[in-house]
Image 1 (cartoon, rainbow, N blue to C red):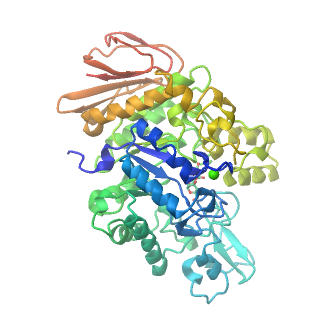
Image 2: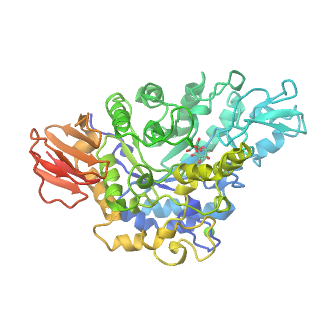
Image 3: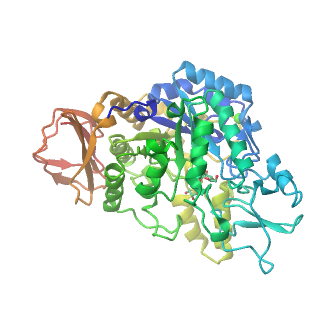
Length: 544
Ligand code: TEU
Ligand code: CA
C-alpha cells in the first residue's frame, strides 16, 4: 500500500543540542548553534530533526529532567531562538520533532516543589508518594541509574518514586489532572507548528509501583489514546504529527498495540532488541558479550517480517548508545569500510531511518583516562555503586568504554580546529581526540568519506520505491559472517549484501541478475553474482 504519510518516506536526524554546536562559546551547544548548521543538515538530505529536550532544566540528566515544559533551557537560549529555529528549518523544508519526557519531571518543576510541601498539598498526587514499610523503602523497585527507585523525603516522612535519578520524580499518570496538564503541553507545541514528538520512556506511564509493574502497565494504552485524541490530534491532523515512543520492553506484539493505525496511538516505536545483543541476557547493559551476527539477523528478520501492520524506526545510534562503528563495526583499520557497511545494511530496510549526529561521519567511541572526565549521571552512579561493591576499576572502565552514554555525547566534530570547531570555549565534555581525522570539513572534501556515503544512501532511499515500500526477504540466512536481503515491489528489486566481519568470503547468488550497482563501499563497478569474493566489511546494494 502506497506510503501516504510524510514520515514513512523520511530520514530523521537526531540532534543532542548540548553537544551539537556552541554559538556563544560557553562550551555548551545551543539553539543558535543548530540554526547555524541547518544548511549542512539540509545538504545531508534529511527531512526532519528530532531535537533532544531543550526545555528549562537543572540538567541533572542533561535536559531529561524538565522543570518547565513550555520554556527553553537558559544554556540553550530563549523561546525566540526556538521560534527562529522553527522558522529557519521551515524555510529549508525541514520539520522539527520535539523530545517529550512525560514519565517524570525535574524535582525543580513547580508541580513537585508544591507536591513535596505537605501531604494535603493540591499537587501531592501529581507524583507517587508512599509510606515507609518497616522503616524502609516501600519495595524493591530499582532505579535505572543505580540504587533504589524510592527517595525518602524528610518534610513529610514519605518516599517518592524515581525510576531514574533522585531529581527525576515520576509523574502519577493515574491522576487525571496530570494527564490533562500533559495534554496541554502537547497542544502548546502542536500549535507552535512542530511536526511530531519523540516520547521518552512512554512504556512506563502505566506503571503500578505497588505491584512492581513498570513497563506495559494495564492503563498504558488508555493514556496514550488520550494523548493522541486530545493532544497529537488536537487540530485534526494527528496522522501528520509523527510520534515515536521509546519502548525498551516492546516485542513485535506489544509494539503493534502502539502503532497499528487503527489504535490511534503512535506512529512508531524505538524498540531495542538489536541494541541489546552485546549484553549477557538479563544481566543489563554493562555485562558485555560479543554480538553474534546470527542473533542480529534473527532480530532484523523478525521486525521486518512479523511487524507488517506496524512501521519500523530504524536506527543504530542515539544519545544513549555507544557509537555503532565501535560496537558492531571495526573502528580501527576498517573504520571507514565498516561504518559504510553498517549504514548500507540499515538504509535498505523497511521503515524510517533515524541518523544520530556524528554517525554520518563514522564518529567512534571515546576512552577518557579518568572517570572524572565523564559527565553522564548513569555512568557516574554505576561507577560509584560498583566501586562500593569492590569491583575492579579496570573492569568498570571497560564497561564504560564499551557502553557508556558519553560515547555518544562528545562534541560534534566539525573541523580540525581546536575543540573540533564545536566551541571556542571549554567544552562541557571533552572532544574525542580523533577529531583531526574525523570531521565534517575533511569528509566534505572527500567524495569517498562516510559522510558522502550517508548522503548518497539518503538520496537513494528517496528514489528507489522498493526500499520505501517493497517487501523484505532474507538471503544467505544461515551465513554467520554475511547479512543479505532483497526488497521487491512491482517487479523492481534490490539485493543488499553486507559482510559484518574482517574476513574475505566467496559467495554465489546466480539466481539474481545485477541490473545496476546502487552503492558499494569498495567502489565496485562490476559484480558477478555467480561467484564473488566479498571483502572485509564489504557492503553492496544492487538493483536486481
Ligand atoms: O532513556 C531511557 C533509558 O533507560 C536509557 O537511557 C538507559 O540509560 C539505558 O541505559 C540506555 O543505554 C531515556 C532517555 O533517552 C535518556 O537519555 C534519559 O536519561 C532517560 O530516558 C530518563 O529520561
Ligand atoms: Ca552555548
